[in-house]
Image 1 (cartoon, rainbow, N blue to C red):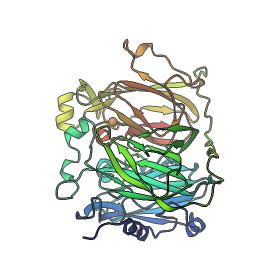
Image 2 (cartoon, protein in one colour):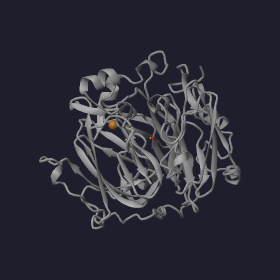
Image 3 (cartoon, protein in one colour):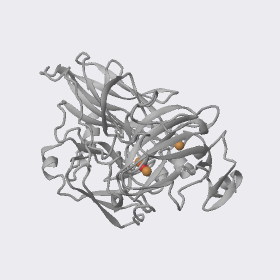
Image 4 (tube, rainbow, N blue to C red):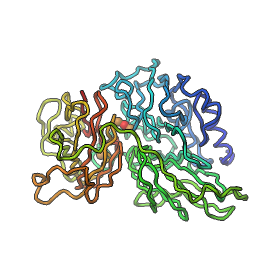
Length: 497
Ligand code: C2O
Ligand code: CU
């Protein structure tokens, strides 16, 4: 088989992205800009194959949107109506969740909560107006631990009214796959007990934009906006570009006060927008590092052109994105009498096994939960998505939630419908939780970044207080985005009236 060249990869991705508003390259094409919002775009979920391994290996059967892994990159302007038709070409039910978009509830795609799953051969029309610019993504929300891991995921980019001046705006999708010797996805291990009770379904192959090794062509003097997305189902990655300063401008789509970082930790589902100035010599080839904690993988390369870019004005001017409009935000102070304080205590998993927990209304011991139901985790003593929500909030109620990870494993907790502000972070106190009183987001406490996120990372034995105003009415999932953990019981929901 011919060696896979960068050109072959780019051409392949382009061919699969023929839909309105779907662009494979980093830039919004004139045609896409004109017609975006005229939709609906068709996103067809169906089996296909993808060249995930080196070029001398056979392709791998995957499930994909419009035949491409990752799915077509969708770029649309903020505040304009967007419509997409999901066509289910799988032989399993599916949905699409627009991860991170502060969406209308009916368009959230959470199977069994906001819509029924879409049967094989059926279609479902999504239509909404994204309120915020930022880096989001789309993926199924039915048996996500399998459907995402088989390849169903794509970037969903909502562009600013006045995009900041950069030379290239590029999405980098990191993904982790579990692939057998014969180059097939290891389908037999979906839902494996070891994965769901330990660190989740970790893979053995890392791809960048669907390729085993991805070259990002740059020119000396370029200013890049890189939109990093970790689409892995369990793998936490640290991304670095040796020799380049990473200036963080947004996290999970939401603008931050820019800061510099050596590397960026991305838990599953998290995103980070960084501005990178290409200051190395022409012809340089320098790795894009994805550090798994055990291994520093070269996921791809920045490949500097032999020529310089003829421009200098932009470099050095800091880029600051406009903050989102968040109703009531900043007003979750403990002084408010109506502040609602909710605890979410996370228990279970290997080493700190559950004792007993409630499942479908019954109190069961750990052995029964594990053996008969494959459940090993609980939130507040309750396993899986219960009939009753974790909490019911009044519209615009200010909320402070303490996430308490009493397990021996890290987790990536994802809130649907809202971004939440990281207010305070620290170890679980030795003398128990009773002595921890509500903190106030007026002064972001030590360890609390103050960042707005839709997916928050918790180390083992760590607690994190988040604040938000429950402004978005509906039924919203709250679950671990290490998807085998979600399957194993780490899922609940909350309601905003
Ligand atoms: Cu990215 Cu509940 O999902
Ligand atoms: Cu988890």
